[in-house]
Length: 179
Image 1: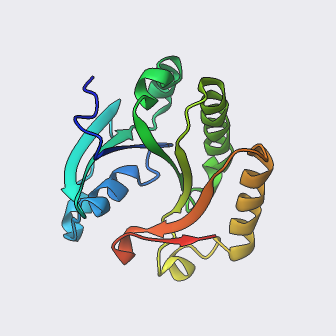
Image 2: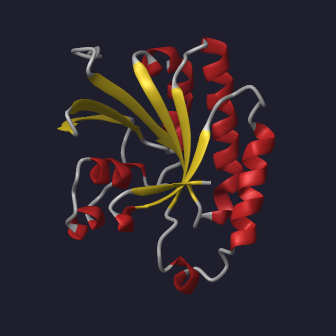
């Protein structure tokens, strides 16, 4: 594994369940605006390192595939994977209500490992696929359900653990709103 080549290179780790939208977020961060690029995404196996330059900085985005078969290896080698990172973004697909519990269990394990390894990095949660037409396409997703999810997240994260929660969507060419 390659270390950051310079102090100006920012390593960001993206984690979350499979199909939560991590790779789509990477494409948005890279400035991809062609929607057909998003429909051609295949599941990330293991992890992929995306290197690019934008806004005067160089970024290494580590996109970790979220399939169950990879997660145990991530836990076993967490210290190695997270080394040099300045930010970890955990992505939850808000349209996948059936897997909220699994996603929150995964989040809990990541937070335990971050506390155990004592890495000091910026931590964000992206409530992703908060799409503009969600109300008409996914009528079962209501604001009170999102608020209940946020409450569950707040209840499982220790009070001294610093984090921010954002509502995100690729359709706003990557916009994040503070919750």
